Length: 84
Image (tube, one colour):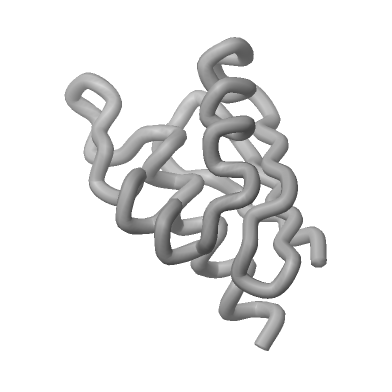
């Protein structure tokens, strides 16, 4: 299942998440720091929604209350809930 999540408060504007049940298969960011986000995307592939959420939730970018990894944690949870 592929799911598009519009980010809030980050340089990236959208995250496309592909899940297989509760396993993250693929992640693609639109905008943001390309190299870093490619790395984050590869690191979460194969992990569960719970693992991604517990690892990335709450990470901040500078003085912002969120970050691209934090938004990814929200995106995978929303994608998982949408497939139920």
